[in-house]
Image (cartoon, rainbow, N blue to C red; front, side, top):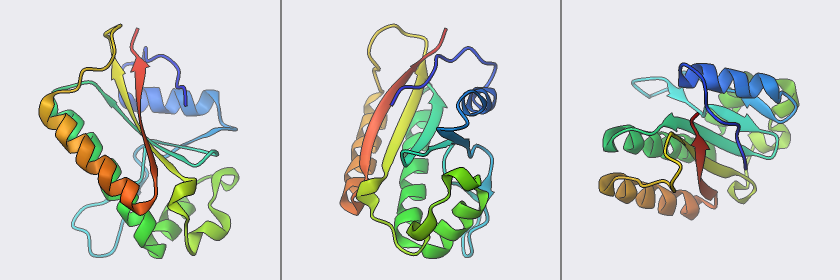
Length: 159
């Protein structure tokens, strides 16, 4: 998975631009919140969803709390998507027809999906995640892999 460089004013602008530049591959899901029964707040499934079944969460590099929130967001979304048909139905309704789940709405094989944590960074070096965020990433990674997902970390270069 490769995403274009980040040279936008916000994550929202970046996600919209990237999806618009590659509509055949990516669907914009940023800010398309899911009202899920029983949850106190709405859930964002992901920022970008690919036809290759990549559930992509994008966040600019920040302190431990920002990155830990990113990892928690992917975990909550991934768990609901794997365990709950109603959540999948609600997600599917927000996807464009070209990216819809089809028969996967009824039951998914999580091994066919990848959770991608895309972190935007200005540094030209490899990502250096704060210690507590590394712990949260490791825990999210383990739980998501227990469900059968593939999980990856992606650096997006800010210019």
